Length: 330
Image (cartoon, rainbow, N blue to C red):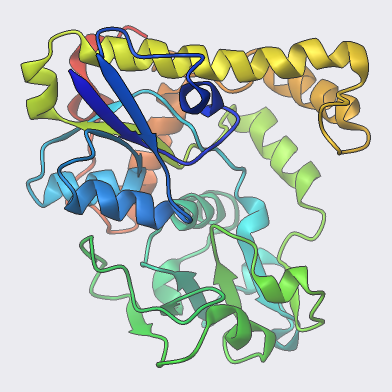
C-alpha cells in the first residue's frame, strides 16, 4: 500500500516527515504539506490522491453533514488556547467581553472556523456572549480573499453575515476601526507590526487561559487526522497503524523537550524555555498534549456542543459517530 498523508510540519509530525517514524503496513509513505492550513484541507477535499489528512473539526462536521464519509482519528496535531485569538479595535472602546454587543466582528475564511467556534463558545459560557447580537464580516486576514469555496457555509438565520468588499482585509478593517473586533486563528499582521489601533481583548491572556484550564481541564484542539472510510474498509488495521505512527511522532517531539531540560532547552532560541516547560507541565501534566479519546472526550464533547449551539450543525454529533470505532478505546 502506497500512502499519501498531508499535514502541517509541526514538531508533533516532524518524525513522520523526516522518516524516523513510519506507518506499519505502508510500502511507501509520502508526506506533503502546504503554505497554509486551509490549503491542506482543500487539497484533501478536492484531491483523491491524498489518502489521509489533517482536517479542521468544523470542516469535518460540515463534510459529514454534506454526505462525505470521512472518519476522524483521535490525533490532535494542532491545539491553541483561544482567549488570545480575539482582537479589538482601540477605537471601539471595548475593554471587557461583556461589551461585545451590537458590534461588527470579522472572522477569517468562514463563519465558525475552528478557532472561532472555541472562542465564541468560551465567551458564551463565561460572559454571556451571544453571536446573533452582532454583525459578522467574513474575509481574508492579511490578504484579501473570498470565503472558502471548498466547504459549506451553514449559519443560523438570525445571524447577520456579510463578505468583506473586494480588496479589503480584516486586519486593516480592524486597525482602521471599520470593524470592532476580530476572531482569528492567526495573529493579524497589523498587531504584529504594533499598530496602535489593534489590541487583544485579553491583553494578559495567559493567566486567563490558565485559570480557564484549571477549571475546565480543556486544552482546545482545532484539528484531527481524517481518512476516507472506504480506504479503512479496504485496509483493515490502517486506522490503528496511523494512530500508532502519529503517536510515536508526537512522543518523539515530547521527548526532545523532556530531554532538553538538562540543557536548559538550548535547542530552541527562546530564553527561559525551561521555565515555560515547567510551568506548562505543572498545570497540564507530563502528557500535556494527549492523543486518544480517553483524555480528550470532554474537550471534544464541549466542541460538539459549541458547534451545535452556534447553529453550525443540524444536530449535536457524538464522538462515537465521528471517530474510528477501532480507536474508541484509546
